[in-house]
Image (tube, rainbow, N blue to C red; front, side, top):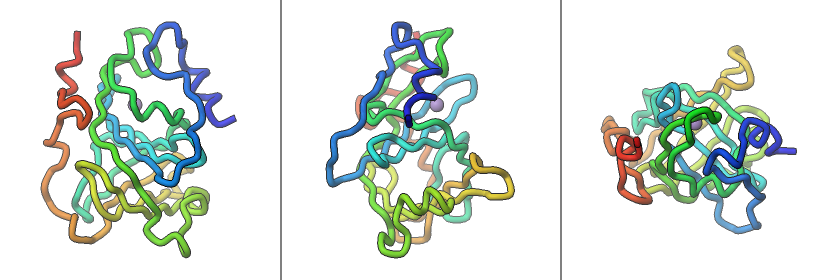
Length: 185
Ligand code: MN
């Protein structure tokens, strides 16, 4: 089952993260990007698909510049309600450290007839449009086949939202306006 690996890594009596259930069917697909200060700072990029969150860890975070190709390591599926998690994973737990909701919103396939999302996940070529608070417009997640199934690139596609602005400088939670640093105890 999709969330077995997620649950195996966590002791839910010791961490405030959700144990998780599948999403109810809804028309709009959600995405979230969580900035996570674990052993290495990274951004967790998550797309709702089949009731769970398909997840990639992006060390440098997303870019608005189509010339930047950001490494995105595929990680285990996370439960749908993980999209609402912001807080501190206590020391001694998997992924210990602070998490903020850096961006969130809805997304859709860029070209659903030719590139349906589920097929893109299998072929390693996902093309989608984000409707977030920070990220907007067309993006692609492309598997680097020669580097293995977990190694992907997150790339901004050229459109009116493309720019050379460093979007990671906008470092507050879109949910609470907090910075990651302010969650440290
Ligand atoms: Mn993470």
